[in-house]
Length: 92
Image (tube, rainbow, N blue to C red; front, side, top):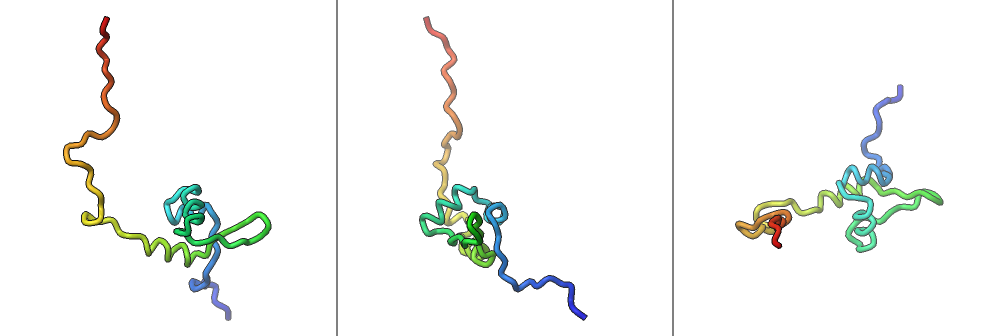
Protein backbone atom coordinates (compact mmCIF):
# COMPACT_ATOMS: atom_id res chain seq x y z
CA UNK A 1 0.00 0.00 0.00
CA UNK A 2 1.40 3.41 -0.99
CA UNK A 3 1.47 6.39 1.32
CA UNK A 4 -0.67 9.37 0.32
CA UNK A 5 1.41 11.76 2.42
CA UNK A 6 3.29 14.33 0.30
CA UNK A 7 7.07 14.18 0.42
CA UNK A 8 8.34 17.03 2.56
CA UNK A 9 12.00 16.66 1.65
CA UNK A 10 11.55 17.57 -2.02
CA UNK A 11 13.12 20.90 -2.99
CA UNK A 12 10.38 22.42 -5.08
CA UNK A 13 10.46 25.42 -7.40
CA UNK A 14 8.58 28.58 -6.43
CA UNK A 15 7.48 31.26 -8.87
CA UNK A 16 7.63 35.04 -8.36
CA UNK A 17 4.28 35.55 -6.54
CA UNK A 18 5.17 32.91 -3.94
CA UNK A 19 8.72 34.27 -3.68
CA UNK A 20 7.28 37.72 -2.97
CA UNK A 21 4.97 36.19 -0.35
CA UNK A 22 7.81 34.31 1.38
CA UNK A 23 10.31 37.17 1.44
CA UNK A 24 8.03 40.18 1.80
CA UNK A 25 10.00 41.95 -0.93
CA UNK A 26 8.59 43.57 -4.05
CA UNK A 27 9.33 42.16 -7.49
CA UNK A 28 11.61 45.14 -8.17
CA UNK A 29 13.58 44.52 -4.96
CA UNK A 30 13.98 40.83 -5.83
CA UNK A 31 15.26 41.65 -9.33
CA UNK A 32 17.56 44.33 -7.94
CA UNK A 33 18.95 41.81 -5.44
CA UNK A 34 19.58 39.30 -8.23
CA UNK A 35 21.48 41.92 -10.23
CA UNK A 36 23.54 42.90 -7.14
CA UNK A 37 24.22 39.27 -6.25
CA UNK A 38 22.50 39.59 -2.87
CA UNK A 39 19.49 37.38 -3.74
CA UNK A 40 19.45 33.79 -5.05
CA UNK A 41 19.66 33.43 -8.82
CA UNK A 42 16.65 32.45 -10.91
CA UNK A 43 16.31 29.03 -12.53
CA UNK A 44 15.08 28.93 -16.12
CA UNK A 45 12.06 26.61 -16.29
CA UNK A 46 11.07 27.19 -19.87
CA UNK A 47 11.21 29.70 -22.64
CA UNK A 48 9.12 32.25 -20.74
CA UNK A 49 9.22 31.08 -17.15
CA UNK A 50 11.64 31.21 -14.23
CA UNK A 51 11.54 30.22 -10.59
CA UNK A 52 13.68 29.76 -7.50
CA UNK A 53 14.53 26.72 -5.41
CA UNK A 54 12.51 26.93 -2.22
CA UNK A 55 15.56 25.86 -0.20
CA UNK A 56 17.65 28.77 -1.53
CA UNK A 57 14.89 31.29 -0.72
CA UNK A 58 14.45 29.90 2.81
CA UNK A 59 18.23 29.90 3.33
CA UNK A 60 18.37 33.54 2.18
CA UNK A 61 15.61 34.45 4.67
CA UNK A 62 17.42 32.66 7.50
CA UNK A 63 20.66 34.55 6.72
CA UNK A 64 19.03 37.97 7.14
CA UNK A 65 20.10 39.86 10.24
CA UNK A 66 17.57 39.94 13.06
CA UNK A 67 16.66 43.49 14.06
CA UNK A 68 17.58 44.30 17.65
CA UNK A 69 18.08 47.48 19.64
CA UNK A 70 21.84 47.08 19.22
CA UNK A 71 21.87 46.95 15.41
CA UNK A 72 19.14 49.53 14.68
CA UNK A 73 19.81 53.06 13.63
CA UNK A 74 18.12 55.33 16.12
CA UNK A 75 16.18 58.32 14.87
CA UNK A 76 17.49 61.54 16.32
CA UNK A 77 15.86 62.08 19.72
CA UNK A 78 13.15 64.70 19.57
CA UNK A 79 13.10 64.71 15.76
CA UNK A 80 9.76 65.52 14.20
CA UNK A 81 8.54 63.03 11.64
CA UNK A 82 6.47 63.78 8.60
CA UNK A 83 6.04 66.96 6.61
CA UNK A 84 6.76 70.39 7.95
CA UNK A 85 3.58 72.36 8.64
CA UNK A 86 2.51 74.79 5.95
CA UNK A 87 2.66 78.47 6.57
CA UNK A 88 -1.04 79.31 6.34
CA UNK A 89 -0.79 82.98 7.25
CA UNK A 90 -1.59 85.28 4.36
CA UNK A 91 0.33 88.47 4.18
CA UNK A 92 -0.55 91.40 2.02
